[in-house]
Image (cartoon, rainbow, N blue to C red; front, side):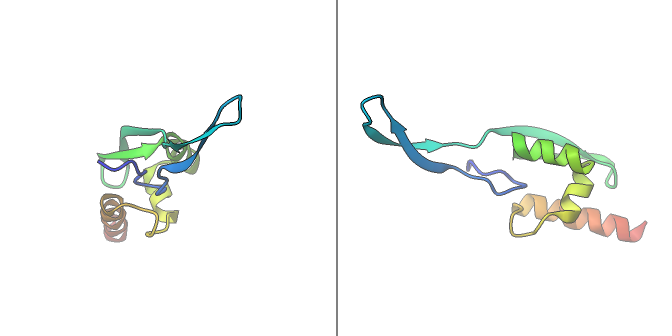
Length: 95
């Protein structure tokens, strides 16, 4: 399982540990990923995603998963999130 947020595309970054003696050793900064089930009002069901804590706050701020995916760019989304976005658009067009 890759360490990449399914909504924002946020992944690991690299940098240095810097000691008090100013010695530098390589390290990785991993995103704070959580397995969550977000509810879609349009589909009427939950969607399981692995997203960062920052993305979870963004989803809440925009007013839910449907509103977030409507504004999200397809390039940033994972294949699973892109599929859910397409399902939501199809359901909204039918309604």
